[in-house]
Image (cartoon, rainbow, N blue to C red; front, side):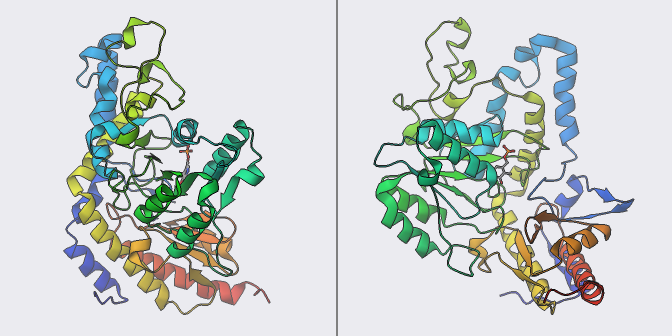
Length: 432
Ligand SMILES: *Cc1c(COP(=O)(O)O)cnc(C)c1O
């Protein structure tokens, strides 16, 4: 057990010893009002890898030079561009082979596409189970997919209950709920790391429970990929989706990824929406009717690859491959542990951390819930050059990212927060 100290000297010592410290310089770091900001918002939009511009420039040059011939004759032929990211993507999510993953579209689009295939309600088994406070896109998708099949969302969409006064789920409660309601569940759709609470669910246990209950299990990994270790194939998750612009640093609105378990690779019985890019590569350009999907996740593609955002994605994936998810996770647990330690040192009853304190149940994010004045505190932090993230109604999310954040960033944040809270308690009227 590492003993922390609440001092800048100590934070700097940890930075000095950090084997991943050199990755910080591989990113552009934003400024705020002319000064370097402390960026703790990689859970919302990851920073830009400095290499991204080169990767994009390559494609822009080839497009300028070759026009349409770039599909075949560019340095990274665009016809096969999505294949350039599949090995690293497979490694990040624990797929058994590149065939289990594909990078395409955007996240909410892919979530709906996966539900078209994997939400197969019947009159006795039509319910979708979400965690409490699921991300709105996931709630909307569940609601509208249920309605699309003729079910009343009020009946069809279940939210896992929280115990009174608790903000995160207990695994035993989730498992008991799945067992109790298993007969009715068509789909279990869980955010691998919940965006609001920061809770990292026991994904293998949930997948096993869902399977035992006869339900399909799908995960939205927007806040999990690039943040926590994933073994989707071994866990026998049916499908998963994620975005690339949060921890994967692939730029605003960047491409999304999809995992489809190998056992579904050749399921011709599943309905799916289709476009030419999902069709067998051998017959794609024969331009004939009759959809013959490629095996695996690639068979869910619709459109040809968006090469420019994918070029940014490649730049970032190369950095992940270089750093390695295991060393990143090791640092992440320490870095977030240090943040937690420093927050606990602040003597204030104005806030509490709602993210689980067990490192196995969280990624890098801590969600700090405020009793009062949360929004004002958030604004004051911003004025002091700290970029974090506000979530209604009462939470500041802080995410020290092991690829580019330092222990000193975390130290600085805690110092400023303490000052802001002291000022607020002097200046702002207290809630009675
Ligand atoms: C960020 C996030 C989204 C965003 O969806 P987009 O389609 O990329 O806009 C969806 N779901 C979850 C769980 C998220 O965290």
